Length: 356
Image (cartoon, rainbow, N blue to C red):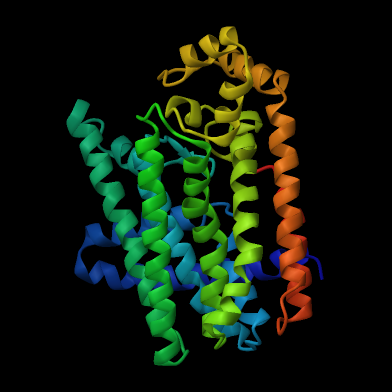
């Protein structure tokens, strides 16, 4: 079975379990207050938008790779990582001032739009941010609840929760580095890779696989071996994300292609471009970075500079190198299910070709 077929087979089950769980929580939350129920409904709508569900699938594969055989239990339990992901994503959209996520309005902007007739200016934005924070917090609570409600032993659940705490701390650390980098003039390539590891590699690949392995009973030495696969793949994923963030199709991506430029994000593709382009081209880039409104013509100027100085090719070659390291690492792990090895290797190729 290819990873694509595994994805198709499991996505419907995952979305169905997400819907069942959230419907139950909406019903329960309405007993607290009508408004609490409304927040849960917004969280459900956001969660069920078109999404890759990669992190849930990695929890499942980490579990199966280390010998876990209770598929129904692990699918229900793996929902935790999607709730945690959405909690962080909703807050990230607030930090990045994003208006669009998964092809629709971000949560904080949605709430702004509901009270435009009553509020304006700073009060309007504050209301949207406040509600966005609360909806994100719901995701955090549901993530822990899902793990605690699972049918795995108390010992395994406690180990999984400890790993989940590590996940959240790492991604918060990466986010902090990313935010500070936007106002710093001395960001190094090493700093960028620290951000990539903490915000993406550990959070999206390493920790989900590890938690799946923990729930299957894998020990520390066994889990460490998965890092050689997960970390390079996560870095490759983020570099590809940066490329799509500049060269992708906004309709396919479901988010704006100018957001990294508006926020002056210190991406590898931009860092290497500024390092290699002419002084004239640097002036053009700096005149665009951080602008509130960036035209498609201005984006095209930056795209041309990136390609002209060879950075697009450089980044694409770097992705191939990291994918190669990742695939080699997964194939060298002992005592790991062969079918899962193939699926994880195929996932690496699948992610390299993605368009969103």
